[in-house]
Image 1 (cartoon, rainbow, N blue to C red):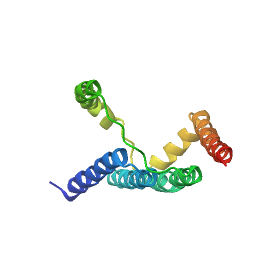
Image 2: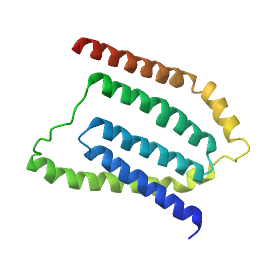
Image 3: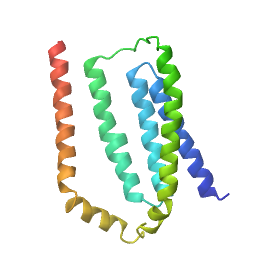
Length: 165
């Protein structure tokens, strides 16, 4: 195995463990910190795959700005530790087979589309140029809608915080 493969497996494992920790944490700040670890490890995976621009955007936008927004909202709402409730036996009985089935379906679909994804890979020389052209031509509307959605989330957090005071 090459060093790149080992690093990929390590960072993928860190991402999965941090994602599981994100779900199991009781305190929202600890969950947010776990999400930051997931974002940074995904940026490392992007770097290993040769997508330097996506890695930089992942760190700056998601691990930086969005996570600061999440932590700001959590602190503004003064969210405390979550109390655990008892899970029903039916949920436990149906949850595990459903999770295994969905994971199998996802793995099967990824396996089926792996050659097509490899054939459509872009070269390093035009990756940034191609991505920016697509972002500001074909995907301008979704880009702007995402910006508006983030603005609405900020305004909603402020309104909720003011309402509780």
